[in-house]
Length: 208
Image (cartoon, rainbow, N blue to C red; front, top):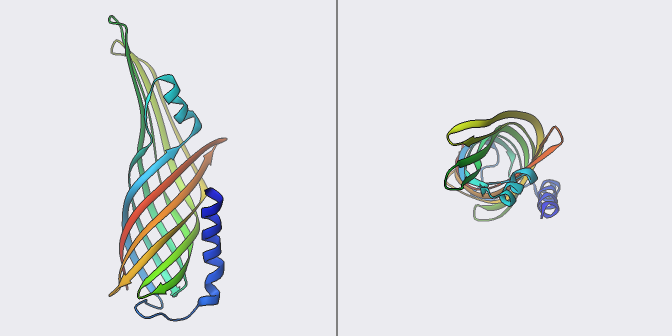
């Protein structure tokens, strides 16, 4: 799946110069702004393994994104964005009738990205697009455990790095209003630890 998405995004970017022409209903060039909301899905081997230890793992959350770009022609644009992936949690509770133990782990991440966007106009304002970019991200992981209301473990860790992301989507533009549906994958890593976040989102924006 990862290779298929990356290949589709790369093919869209490579193919666009051959199709550089005007299309009715699509602005040839200019700035655009937009916002998106969607669902992020988090994958990390250590986080997922908590499910085998009796934790209730929730690796999905609502995410949002703000983006701005410049369209050089109907086929090529550059785009910057800010994305907040939300929070991902794992919680556990146990008791023997006398003692009560609980534990929780929370992960969160956000970042600023920059991408090259290739578009293939189809007809009447519809187009498909692919993107390849980098994101400068910050992430936090915290965990705690309590026994009979007393904290016995309290761990907090922060990570940051610059890593690649890519995506594919469809777009419709009418009267300079733009709507999108897209899938993006963010391949994050830091200190030998890998974090993968998939984002499915719907966007609305405006082309100036």
